[in-house]
Image (cartoon, rainbow, N blue to C red; front, side, top):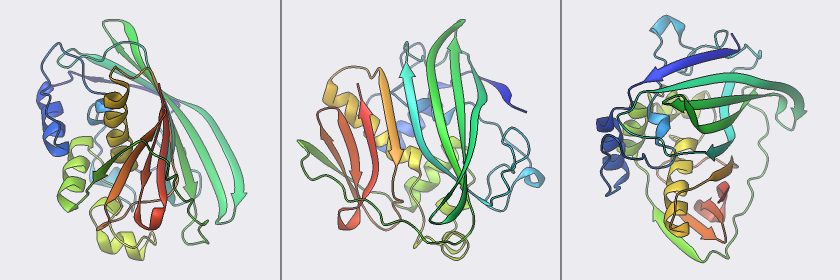
Length: 259
């Protein structure tokens, strides 16, 4: 399967639940524009237990092809905001595989899958998103994480804990065990603790970016560069249209360009 369409009623109550989890003051109402990136709590594709992989995600072999590599991560994304995405108005999301590439890195063989999503409301495409997924083997040497810039003109403290990770996993229907099963995260995937969701970091950056630009976003390009694990906090940074997450020891966890 290389294309799939999902439909959602865009219930404002779900958006309000995410706003509460994030501590966002504005309350979502039917007919009003959703904050940027909130579409990730919609368009669920729930699967029964027998269709899940060892990591709690839907097993490969359906919409996503089997790359022959056990670990799957969200590496980067791009969004084009064409028009407001409205709460309480039915929307359709069509997703398709745009490309698959393979290469060998320091950690061994890698596979990259690019997925395109087009979200329509009232017959018009209001949002286009590309997601880049990376597949890799267990173990292997990890590249040294990049150091984050220190020339920000604005910064905000960001705190993450088990409760926020649980609530975000529930709202996005994300069953990946690295976000709630600390033993699995350490013993199977090699992290030093529970992992904050990449989309959660991107969400926090986009909300900050919209405040910094004082208008709605039109385009975002972001890339995850190092995991942020609990119990660590982070700093959200901004300078001239670029936002980034600076984690412990000055490590850059994510970087994004916005306009």
